[in-house]
Length: 600
Ligand code: NOJ
Image (tube, rainbow, N blue to C red; front, side):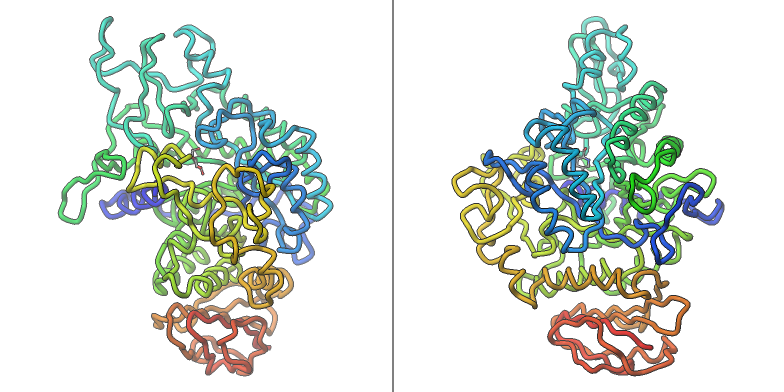
């Protein structure tokens, strides 16, 4: 997978010694409070203990029978989201787009793609969501536009066009009047092959970190900054709850155009990736410091807006794949110059292996290395194989997904999950190359089948098209066969379903004071089979959570390190195999079992 590749790249950066940034030397990042008002009753702003749900609009609910999900479809499902405990939905892009990258190639930032509806449908969605206390968060793509955006059409029309320097243009190496020379350097697109595309009309190369149809903006141009400020204000005025910033770490490139380094395997040899390219470490096109002043500007713009009738502020979420927690800490900015409230912590959720020690270490990092900021945990999205493929064993997948959900919701911070995770939707990639919709799946076939497998229609019920669209329509991606058993209707009726587990967790996250705002501390830290932690506010109660990472029953003793005042535990939530009553000295867990209890 492309995104797994991206993470591997970051990990490799560490291995070959790219200096991690120490938080120590700078002001401890703190949350910007000056503009905040009306924080929620528990003393936190809404986004500090929130449940955020990612919707891939194309695949969630079709309302007009064309086989493509739309805004009115989402509006129809708002009660479901409210009952799931969702505070905000993040919509992947719904702007007009040629849909090469299914909306991440935007051709107009201030409108809605007719496939998804109209601005009036959008306004209705926002107001109906608000009635259910749900905020709508937009995806904001500032790294690139579509090559069909009027700005790029202008830019590529002549070298003297006023929009020329809105994008990144460069002469070829050794270019002459008659030859284009070679590409300016070895930089690669994340979707395969050179990141430079020759434009014959104006005889220069343009840079694209992603598809050829996604030219990168030139963020050294102040006009680009101004244009995005206007776009952001446009949506804030329409009542959105905030933004998720796409590919935000790739806004800037090395101005000296230095080549990226070749990655080395454990024998010190270079290797090729799924696209047949020599694998590179993209340190010259990713995570450059220029992004910080940009996000400070965006935050300042956003903070001048009120809360739109909701308690608390609007929120900036970052797509922040980074090599370590110190880099993540920097994304929050400082108290004087705040940036994101919620940059995604991809360190925890994309470990991609049920490894107790690794989770313990990464969750501890999130608790201890981010200052007073709020971690945003996320285990899944539209760019990665779903949870079954990355964490499942094929036998205990549902139990394992309960384990994952427990880490997601019972850890301190905000929880972001992907549509369908709550029912255990399975990764269902295309089986034939001719069925692939995501272009990266064509470039990478068969090693990388693209991202269609995690974007299949939401499984609402056991009918022909799973309730996603009409029974006779052709959904844009096929409904997986698993929809006959894995669907919302069936799981709503089953108190032991994964959906029921998600609902219980989101409810507990809000209703239990220790889980809502308690600090977090790992317990039983030598145990390699069970991950245990406590959550504790200043009161006398504590919540303990024990999660079995193995297929065998386990018993844990949490009395030692925790110094709990009481040994008897009151069960808050448990999987069927976990024993109840439990005491702190003996919590018995079935295979992949979970126990959450409170010591008073
Ligand atoms: C990250 C998005 O999540 C992904 O789907 C998209 O292809 C790239 N950014 C480019 O916008």
